[in-house]
Length: 106
Image (cartoon, rainbow, N blue to C red; front, side, top):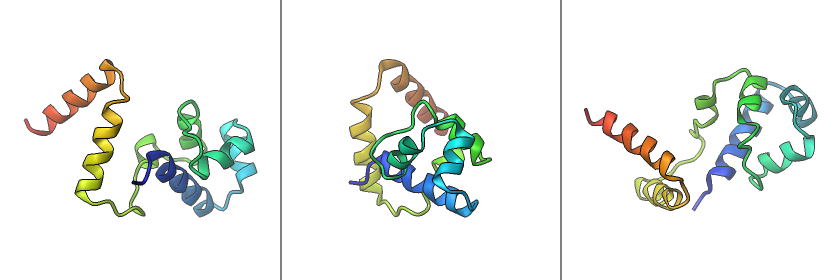
C-alpha cells in the first residue's frame, strides 16, 4: 500500500523539478530546512506544518499538491487507504469528511 506521505513527497519533488528548482532553492522559498524537504520528498515525513508554504513556493494551490496522477491506485486500494486513515482522524475531521460525502450525493 502506498502511503500518502510517499505520494505527496513524490509530487513535491516532481513539481520542484518541473520548475527547475533545487531542494535548497525550494526550501529557502518555503522557509523550511533543506534536510526537512529532503525527508518530505523521500516520504519519511509528512509536511503538515509547511504544506501552505510549499504550495506558495511552488506557485500552486494546496489541492494541486494532492493531484497524484503519477500513482495508479485501484479502487480497492483507495478504499483501504481511506479506511486506514479514518481510524487515525479526530471526530472533527470525520464530521468534515462525512459532510463532504453527503454533498457529493445531493
